[in-house]
Image (cartoon, rainbow, N blue to C red; front, side):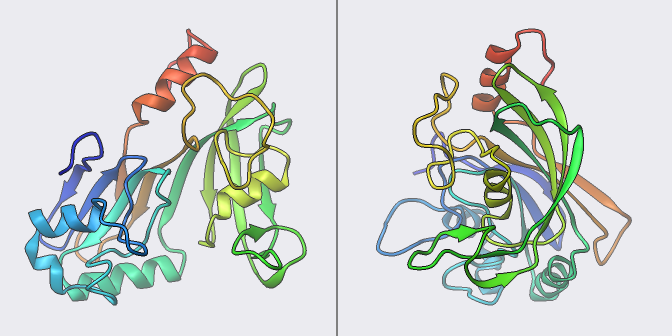
Length: 238
C-alpha cells in the first residue's frame, strides 16, 4: 500500500508523533480519491489516534497540514488533550516553522521580510498577495542560503499560517518556488529532476505541554539534494 510514499517516523512519545511526509502523499483524503494518505498510515500504526482531533473521520490527530507536493515534518497528536494544546500553539504562532525552498532567480537581499496580506483571487480558489477577496495578514521571513546562476536556495520562517503562504509570497517577489504549477512561471526552464514544487518543511521548534523546548527536523529529501548538487557539485546541502 505504501511504497515510495511511506512516511518516516522522526519522533514519538506518549502524547504525539512527528513524521517526515514524502512529496506526493496526501495528508488526508480529498474528494472521491481512494489513494493512500498520511491519515491511513497513521491509523494503521497508531490506532488510538482514530478518536483524536476535530475531524476524526477525515484527519485523525492531524494538527496542521502540508500540500501534497510539499515534503517535510508534520505533527500528529496521540490524545485529545495534546491535540488541543498543539492546535493552540499553532493558532498563537508559538511554533517556529522553518522551510527550505529552491526558487527562480537570484534573490538580491541576503535576508528580508515579506509582509503582504494574502487573499483569494477573484473567480478562483487561488491565493494572491495582490488585490483579492478577504485579505488576511501574512508575514514570511527569509534568508538566502545559496545563490546559483539562475536560482536561489532559501530558508523561510512563516510567522503566520495562511494557505499557500510561502508559495504566494515568493511568487509575489518574482521568485516563485521551482516546480510550482499554480503560482510559478509557465515558460521558464526548471532544473532537471524538478518534478514537483521544491519546498520542504524542514523543522518545528516548540515547547511541549510536558518537557523542555524541542526542535524536530526532517532531512532534505533526495530529489532536492540531487538538484542542489547538480546546480553546485561542491555544495553541502542541509
